[in-house]
Length: 113
Ligand SMILES: [Zn+2]
Ligand SMILES: [Zn+2]
Image (cartoon, rainbow, N blue to C red):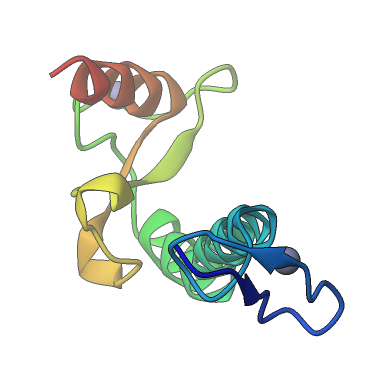
């Protein structure tokens, strides 16, 4: 394989890797992309999540999962009907009020399936 210069202007090392960048820069670039994706996901759980959760909780009196009212130890939380890992959105229609404990146990359940 012919050697070529790494595309990274700060690297410029001669390499014979499969891509335009040397293997080291390629893996660094992928790490940066993963980090950026993580931040976007976290940002997605930001303002619109807060707003939707507030509205759902403001109208909620009972837990949707078990039908019981909230307690001091087990307050209601806004949970996703379709988990975000399964493509659920932060749209208000994807939220429901559920106990913190119901939210957790259901999440664990979904992870096992
Ligand atoms: Zn490089
Ligand atoms: Zn409940």
